[in-house]
Length: 246
Length: 188
Image (tube, rainbow over all chains, first blue to last red; front, side, top):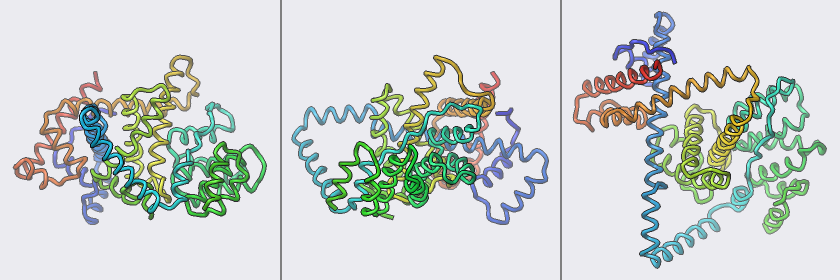
């Protein structure tokens, strides 16, 4: 962070109005023109912008701490201990009621394929990365993004690579997984199908598992059953039995 | 979009709530997903305090992604699964970084520049957070109402029973104080 600029109040407010989208179209255009022509304004803009971002985050974090204190913090634990000590009957009755409600909700309202997806889906944790200076660097860099949760960036890097190697099973497999984590079942399906249809390589069985779950997430139970057959996942048998009963 | 198991908000509602900083949605998401990650961290050499810190970091990452439009789930588990995965990865990285510090730095030179830049940014955020906590109650409340709750000057003025002009001036003064303190700390 560079040394702070001297930014008068009026100027701060004007810059902030632009950052926070408070201007009308006309005001926005006029401000942007000024931003491009007035020397020094852009540096001030960058500073205000980094402050706005930091303040949004800091105030948000304060809020998270309040959530935590109220719902999860020591006060709540103490309260629960008190209830457990003095009101066991009330607790038991409440638990029964809550359990009854959830059972009713779970059984009657949620489609089974969604329940199964939720019960069996655990994202692939990714491959170990060595961060070497070899040709595999671009793939590894994407894997670092994947493992740090920056899935859109991982996808961006790998889709650049797969254009040159459309049949590469590793790329297809992890692109499918990255899209599945992001909830884009349509894209995930395409990449995972590429791996399974190829029918060779080390990722086929894992891809079959995730493809089955992708199908499940969109309600394609029959397709899920068929592809699950190619998987060697430890929970394959149990899931197959559950699907068989549908 | 279908409602997901036991959730009281669907994906669209969660995303909209995040974009608008809707406190009931943010609170629900926070509470409903915390214990899942806490369990994972407690089972993997972590403490409750570390689980809280890691979860909050992950939560902020997801919050930023959604607000910037960089996240588009299409099924019922996208966002909550993503939150868990980000938290899990952050914890794995934390464990790994402790191990790496104890052994040797294997990262190539060209990555260090990016990491150094991120470190500088993190230091700045840490200073802002530390100095923000030391501000007076009123300053913290004005800033929080403006930047987190996105309240207008008119709304904030009503709360403090000030005029809008006074509210605007006070907010600026609070920011100036904070900027000065952070600047002093960073230059020390």
